[in-house]
Image (cartoon, rainbow, N blue to C red):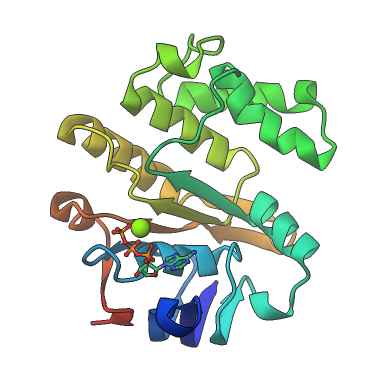
Length: 228
Ligand SMILES: Nc1ncnc2c1ncn2[C@@H]1O[C@H](COP(=O)(O)OP(=O)(O)OP(=O)(O)O)[C@@H](O)[C@H]1O
Ligand SMILES: [Mg+2]
C-alpha cells in the first residue's frame, strides 16, 4: 500500500540545508492504523507529505498503491491525491465562505462531477460524523471539534484508500480530541470497493498526544529524521 525505501529528504542548500528525513524504510500494509510520534522538527509532516506526493524524496523511493511518486507526472500526482488519499490537518483548512456541505462536496467537483451528484453522499457523510442538520452552517458557526468533523467528511468523499492526518487533534481539547480519534478509528480501516476489488483503508496519523497514539494498533517513533 505504502512503501518507503531508504528515503531521504533534504530542504534548502548551503547554510540553509536541512536533512528532514535520513534513511526511512517503512512498509505499510492495507488496513493498518499507524500513529507517528516524535519531537517537533523530527520529520513527521515531511513523511506525510512524501506519502501523498505533495513532496518528493531527495533520494530513495516512495511507493503509493504500486507507483513510485518520483516517476509520476504532477498531473498524475494530483489525480492520485484527489482519488486515493484523504488529508486531514490540524487547522481544519475549511473555506470560510462555504457551508459545511459545500466544504465537503465542492473540492471534488474539480473532477468534473456535478455538485448534485455528490451532495447526497456529502449529506450522508455529515450524518456519519454526527453533524446531521448542520449542512448550511458556515465554519465560524461550528466548534473546533465540529469543524474537524466536516474536514474528516471532506477527506472521505472520494472513498480514499489512504487517510493521512497531521495532528488532527492538535487544536482541540482532550474530549473533542478523543471523539475525533473515535471517528478516525471508525473510518480509518473501512473496506472500500475499488476497481481491483475490496481493500481496507490505511490510516496514518501524526500526533503529539500519547493518549491518542496509544489507541493506534502500530506506532512509529521518529527522531532526527530516522525511525527509532
Ligand atoms: N518546505 C521546507 N523548507 C525548508 N525546511 C523545511 C521545510 N519543511 C520542513 N522543513 C524542515 O524539515 C524539518 C522537519 O520538518 P517537519 O515539518 O517534517 O517536522 P515535524 O516533525 O512535523 O514537526 P512539528 O511537530 O513541529 O510539526 C524541520 O527542521 C523543518 O524546519
Ligand atoms: Mg508537523
